Image 1 (cartoon, rainbow, N blue to C red):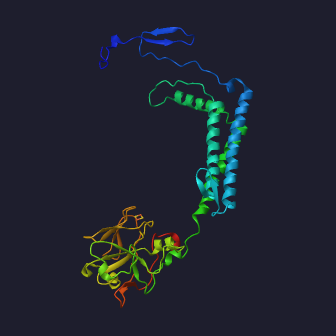
Image 2: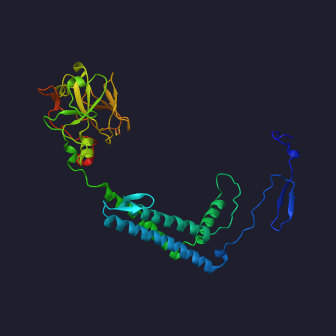
Image 3: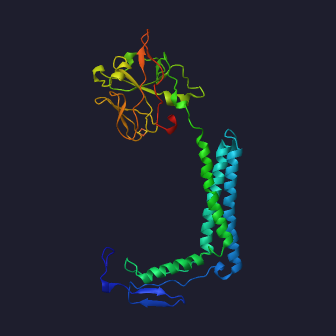
Length: 352
Ligand code: FES
């Protein structure tokens, strides 16, 4: 017979299997249930001293988890954020991050390893065959399941192995504290810091790529131009924070396309300037559709109409993009008439 041909039923070879005693049994039924292999007792099943040793190992692992959680909290409080240490082969890294990662890792490992060791050495490992049965269990089966569950609970030693059980409760109770402590790392509330940006009356609009002041003729129809206030240098310590708030996008529209009268007053010759920070959760907006004057936030697809006051026309953003009032100075450069009239970015609750 070739390897592609399926054998006829009567061509099936009878199944051979070895018994526990080593004799070879030949079954006439090739699909006969081979049955369970003989159960082998573990050392802990027959030696109470070995079982107690295993319980102490489990307790040691859970206790190491508790100690690691306490060390995590102590490290969070005691180690300064600007302290660096040398760790081979990584190099210089933050001592705080290294210690937090290490202690949290040990805390989680202690719980996991303790649970696995408990299951492998102390909980019952007797094999149980569950015969197939109709999907809806009969009352007798349900009663049996409950009886098996209670027997399993008793065999797991949860009631009897008090040391392992109590240390497990302790480790599980302590480990969430690590997450609570990390909430402190979110830093202080922004308070009123979102209310003000570096834009002010008379500040020139600088091209964010060339760092040159922008003239109206630099803003071409059909594309977005990104700008930032004059006087911002990349080596300033707060540059990243301030550019994240002051980021501006400019677009040239036909003045007659601008639907909002207020927007028209704040524009110059069809050039409108809006905050580039999405009012949903603060992603930078960078997709522009010339025909519709819509800009799209790539994060969650909020869409804003730049010809209608930056109004939200789609997506989860809660309010329109703030507009910057611009004009042209005597030298022909675009400049701001003041700061944004409202906080930029997401509508967090503390903005008031
Ligand atoms: S951040 Fe822009 S849509 Fe979510």
